[in-house]
Image: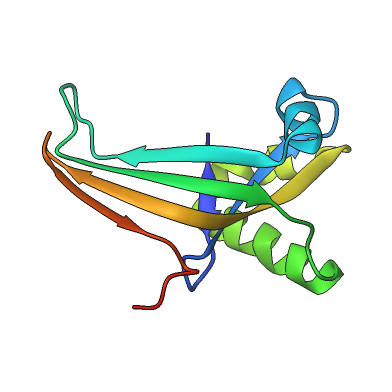
Length: 114
């Protein structure tokens, strides 16, 4: 799945068709997890799990910004983003867990004070 983080890293933007099971599931239960790792044919040495929540864009300008950012990061999505029924989704990060190797774990939440 292709996604794009917001400039501050607190949100992740992705696109999906309105009629997909993914979208229906997110609407029914707006919590999701994203897994980002550096796997290259073996076990990852770094893995980031982001617990997130689907939230609407505040306005059309925010959604347009996310769409442009997705296209800039993933130009191969141009045809997909041009389809009727494609929605850009906004996932706000609630909790981040970074795993280095098998034993080093760092957990952070934006709600926590640094």
